[in-house]
Amino acid sequence: MTLDRKISPAIHDAVEFEYKLPAIQQEKLDNGLPLYWLDAGVQDVVQIDWVFTAGLWYEQKPSVAQAAAALLKNGTSSHTAEQIHEALEFYGAQLKINASNDYASITLYSLTKHLPELLPMVYEIITDATFPESEVEIHRHNTLQKLLVNLRQCEFVANQQIDAMLYGPDHPYGRYSRKEHIEALTREDLLAFYHAHYNLSNARIFMAGKVGAKEVKCINDVFGKVPITASTLTRGTYGIETSAETIARINNDPNGVQGAIRIGRLFPNRHHPDYAPMVVLNTMFGGYFGSRLMSNIREEKGYTYGIYSSLSPEVSGGSFIIHTETGRDVVEPAIKEVYHEMELLCNEPAADDELLLVKNYLLGGLLADLDGPFSILQRWRTLILNGFTEDHFNRNINIYKTVTAKELQLLAQKYFARADFHELVVI
Image (cartoon, rainbow, N blue to C red):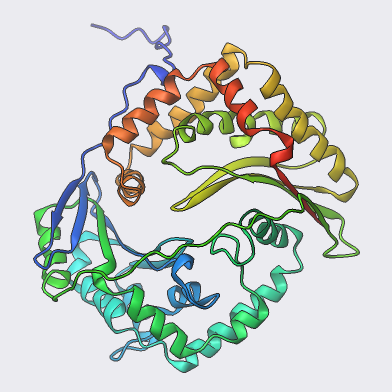
């Protein structure tokens, strides 16, 4: 059959496609350490994540979790920070370490063929980090200088303060680094946190790329031979102390010409039945460039270059926050329009064509995510760390496809009451 190039191909909406999450392999190393791996690549590259319960939730002193993550690869008993970084560069690899609210992740990107040389180095970093005093001192100095610079920026201060307003300044999700916290960091603090939370008994390993039995054996040969004990870590509890003051104005710079606006409320995490439909509502409201907030406040009013809303699910809670920066003279009109868009969603169901556009955007992005091994691994990692299975993924896809305008209106009425939001402006 000859292809007639004068006839354009049929256009299909993203909601018409079937979405299947490629299966992940799960097994235990010889010592019982869990490994989840995915063979989904065409290039000889691999991503390996070691995930530890070493986020901010677990620190006994402020700023310790992030400092430990930052300094983990800056020296072992056998290698200096410079030697470790030179070795990574020699093999063209990247090793990223990050501490979030609940977890800390060590992520290796490498050519698959270099794993035999790189895995022992990662093992050494995980099991024999020494946190040299000279590196701790450099970290204190650099972090303090960066903090002092950032505190002059209204958006940085706003991000700090809105979390503190929602959770309370002593809650792990609301706590932020202060000058005195950084100055008080000691090598002993970091070593104590490291030994307690970067123990392999607390780890889960995730791998994706062009990988198979050979790479699994390579990981097992390095990480599966050392004896591990059952994890004794317990997750502490913290009470949320949402600020009674729902409106705050902070004059951070008397000469500032820009104001950072944050309007937020607490919102359930991924385990709540309202979370998945809220993903759709959030996309329509402020989750993409064609959203209602962007169309009104950026395109029509010209108050800002960009305005977005986002969901931030955590292990023990979550939040929903609108964030933007505007000229200080239009801060209040911009806030008024945010609430106006909330009211419209509460009072009027979305038109069918708008809802279809939002669904196509949301599902189209998901379709792109399922095209690469690293993004697929991220999907699986989120599911596994939250105790979900593939059924949860399939359920969410069905909700994205089938949620109605009326259901979104009822959801807006439930969560978009102005009295439930905290409003912050930093200039």
